[in-house]
Length: 322
Image (cartoon, rainbow, N blue to C red; front, side, top):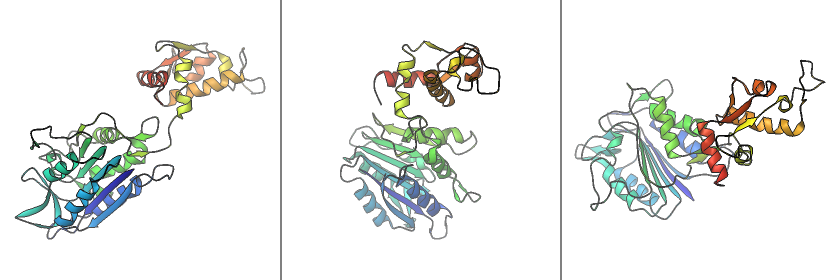
């Protein structure tokens, strides 16, 4: 069971934001289903405005129970005081909203297995930097924070895309940019995608976690089906092996195809294997040896081998991890 509270607040008195509601609506649309349309998160959406009392109560409810994943996304103003605030639209000079320390304490005390907090607000990395709870680690077990900016930085909106810069990258990541070969999008994958997309002169995202195993926040169609990935350890008995190829692996090497053909002619069994190997090559798991293309590796009686990434999935295949 997965549940999410998605918040995008624009209507701050005298300091309105423009696209936080767009951010929240887009995030809801992506995480409530997986890429194949199957249900994913049960989402509560709050946009435009929200009081401190209502936001704090919603966060309490989010982190209650024992869900597999409880996800909080907040897009709005943040304040750089008392360890940071998620500003609500009824803020005042005496009370800016919900303290980040209070949010973290609720997450730390939650019985939910994975607690994911994603903040697209100024000073977002204040979450978890300046408090110790009951003399324990700042991050409780199972807690992950992805923050849009460092604790001293603001978070930008971009009128050309009508989203926050950080959230636009999250959207791209959830659409598939952050997916692994199996189609899983984890918090770590999302952060890595965002981090690589922002330059040294831009706001810098922050990732903090205390977790032993991630559950995906979304899945899309796998780049390579698990049934095919399992064949890695069949084709390559040892991680340093090369798979010997010859022209019989190339399906176009047939007498009825008008081009130069070379014996041995294409064989159905070899062609099927070669298609798997070419698929592996297309996602960076396998590379030809001594030539640039798998086609020439076959036609010139060369071979292919595992890449460093391929070795990782070879081990997973060998250990029957998928």
